[in-house]
Length: 443
Image (cartoon, rainbow, N blue to C red):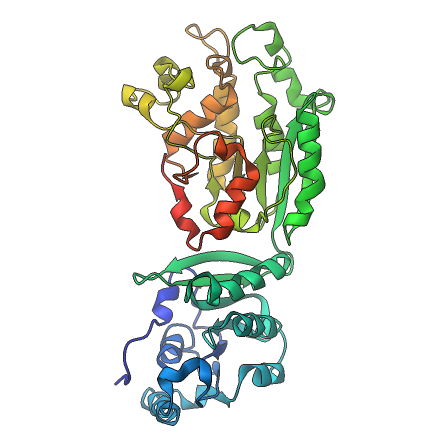
C-alpha cells in the first residue's frame, strides 16, 4: 500500500516521545515527500479523531534536490493517494509551498510535535528550526532528521547552530542513530530549561587562580544559565558536615594534600546537588594546578550528553590502571566496598574524577551518599578512613563505586589520563564529534 521506497518512520521515535492517543495531536511536518512518515505519525500518535497533521512541502523542482527533478508532481499525487488510502484525509492540513513562507502563517505555541526533514543545507535547517520553534508548545517535541548528512558541513551544522543559540529554551533528549550512520536529534521545548551548576573548591595557590579563571569564563562558553557553587576552606568550615572531616589533618599519610584528603569534595558536590532542579546538570570541576586557564570551548554538548546519560562518572585513559603507581591497588579496600571482588579489577583502567557531570535522580543520590559513607568508613581493619588508604584519596573510593555500579565514563583513545584533566580538551572532543555516544563507555 505504500509506494515509492523505504523511509524512516515514527516507529523510530519509540522510547523517546511518549504517545497519548486519548488526546488530539497537533503535528507539523516540514518535508513530507510521499507521506510515509506522516502515516506512521497518525498511527502511533494521532489516532484521536480530532488530531490535525500539518505538512509543509513545495513539491516542486529546485536545485538542491536535482535527484527528484521532474518527479515532484508525481510524488505529490502519490502523497494524496497515500493519505486517502489510509483514511486520514480529514486529519491532514496540506501547506504546499516553501517552509519560510508557510511556517509564519501558523499559530504560535500550538504544536505538540514538529518534525524537520526539509532542505538539508545548514542555513535552511537553521531557518526551519528557528521559525518552527515558535510554533511548538512548551514541553513539545522537535525532531531533526538526518543529523550527520553531508558530514559537518550539512544538516549537523545547522542543527548544532540552533541548539547553541536556543540552548536556554530547550532540553536535548537524545540522538538516535540509524544503522546507516545518520541520526535523529530529539529536543523538548522547556521554558525553564537546563541550568548548569558548576561546583569548584580551591585552597591556596595556584588553585585559587585556576578556579577564578574557570568561574570568570564559563558563561562565555554556554547558552545556558550557570549557577556557581564556589567553595574554599573558610566557607566549608562553616558547614555542619565539616565536623565529620575536621580531624583528618591529624592523619599523616601519602595523599593528605592540605590535610583533608579532598574529603570536602563529595560534601560540596552533595550540597550543590541538593539544590538542582529536574532539568539541571551538576558539573564538578577540579581547580587544576596543571591547567591554570579559563574556559575557551563551549560546554553545552558535554552537559547535554551528561543529562542524557544521567551521569558521566569522570574519564579513563589507556595509560593509567588501578595498579599503576599504586593509584588504587589495595584489594582489601576494594573488598570492603565490593565483597569477594576479583584481583583482576586492579588491572582495569583507573577512573579520573577531576570532572564529572550528573543530573538528579534516585541512583545518583544513592551514589553520592555511598561516596561519603565509604570515604569516611573505619573499622578494626582500617582504623583510618578509607579515603586515606590510597594517595588518590576521594578518587579511589569514587573509582571503586563506578566499577561497582557499572557506570559510564568519558573515553577518547588519543587522550591519556592527564590529558583528560584539561577541561577545554575534553569539551573540544565533544564539540567536534557527531555521535557523542561513542565517547561514553564502560571502564
